[in-house]
Length: 394
Image (cartoon, rainbow, N blue to C red; front, side, top):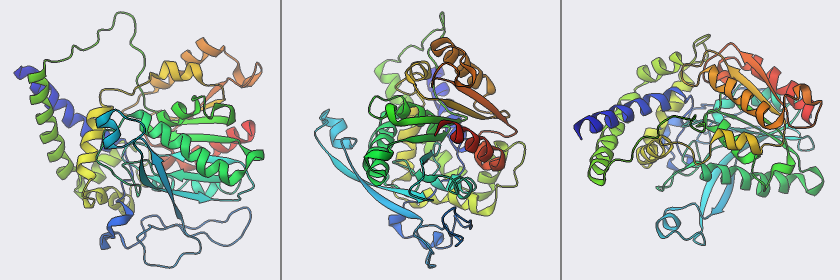
């Protein structure tokens, strides 16, 4: 029992370090109105294809006037809530407030960006301006993260999959109309897993023109002969859970210190850490200001740490659109071997089909000189790869 408890506690500590290492933009819920974030965390300008006027992005808590409101709210009415989970009754609905960005010419094809674990749409700060010159770009804050609500409930991959699918249906397709229902979805880390999970779903797969994976997370189906860890008995499980909560709570307090945040970020930006700036550090520190942040953090870690509800193998098999792997080859957490395996699985299920000569089910890989967050560490290279891919699929 003691050995199991120690292993569980160590795993919890590692999970915290991993989650923060694969995260580069925590931001607090807009509803708390904390003055610490009254300065813009998300501030830059760009020109769009339809106007030469500068678009100024800033935190929803900023007091400055904006040329255009960078964030919109979508009221997501869903069965994903604590009451429904407790009673196992999907008819119980709750409305969660979801924040998102919508930038660019609304007549152009839609590109949805999905952030990674603990991050937010802020993490695409260097991608949105360039991509919005040619596409209508959306970036959503997943439930439990960013400026979206942080309800106390259980989290698993189906929550974010359904959120993305219903956002596409209720917001993007509603704006585009019936004649323009085509979209590409891009995601980093957990957002990459969410992107392909949503893209493979029968509710929207016929409209998805492409899926872009930026060091996507996810669990592969166990190889033949691999052992599945035995489930601990209820007493051990209860004690382990208590230790996990303690370790994660302590780590949550320690890792929110600016110097520690900067250290962790630089470890996952191995080629060029110059984008690890004070704004990024502050955007990670902010979740501690939300009263629900620590509990949501604990629940997400302990749930996702046991693996997503669908294997990457099965998702890739169901994908019917072209896939781009824009992969940070120096990722210390999700190694290039994961991308290698995705390519092998795709070829196994859909054939080699390089360049799409034999239909829409093709996959290509662009290697990026970066770590776990290539879109923020090497945005020029990633933007170039995405734009080339989008030009092929739309």
